Image (cartoon, rainbow, N blue to C red; front, side):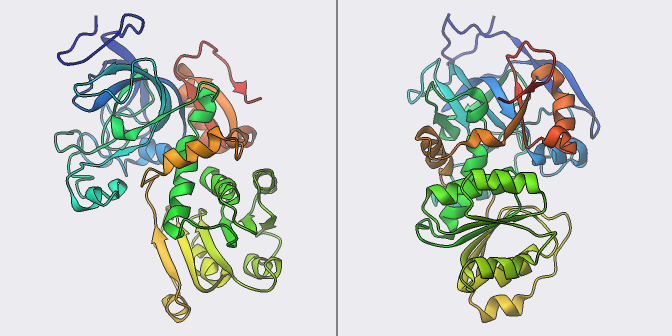
Length: 387
């Protein structure tokens, strides 16, 4: 059975020597196989993965390679296990860990910075200067599960304790996988200023992060909160999560509608989650002078930006990566306090063995899929609709 020096285990949580894990071959080729169950090093724990949500970045990694490059460079991630939005149960402790106990339920952040570089010392671990320099080698201390090290489409994963967030027992596994998404939205609003009560906010793009940005902004007291998009079902969900007004950009001019709905004035903040080619220019036109834009999406192509307009109007742009500055802890606190219902964006659940179907639902938005969750310990062999 599972035995490693300096690793603490417990009889009530037996750990196998090998685990089921989905691994990549060539791009787009996932295979369910066996891997050695990893062992936590100092300041790390072994997490038994109970549930993992699918992110659009997972699809990018599986089919195209970047932003993960684990084995052999682009476009291959040979024998790599993707997946990064997971939660689970602490199953074993590495050396020096007393902050968590075996049996604790946790959800995880993606990034554990090296802890040594300038950005990590500033708390900007998602901008770690050692990111990308140690693919497949964690000796420098940096780890980004599902990006630079094996991720969550498996039965177990190793996590640094800095990436863990305690969970209340009354939070479901599925809801717990959404803490990361809400944490990204929280990070964006933190970078825009943090004190958003009474400030006007537009969220562009009602994907999972955009919908959570609506919920978090409203929970922080922003007023009004406006959501723009092109799909009526997503806009309706935005209203349920707290949007004061929604705008379908297919049927009306989004910039004009924002100004009209905000009393003829531009807004204070825009959280851009669409990645559309002209999104930055439209966001700038929605703002009042001195306003701020948070860029949370990855456009597929370089975009032309009207810099003169940004300069003339003292507009500030912030780019965010992931869920930095411990934003996941604040997001989890809001979810624990029932300040918003993140489960509204969870639409489908599949067992781990049915990951290819789950990925297809997420990619093609089958049955209006938004957040698709995979349960590593699920016994069901068919799709389960979220209640």
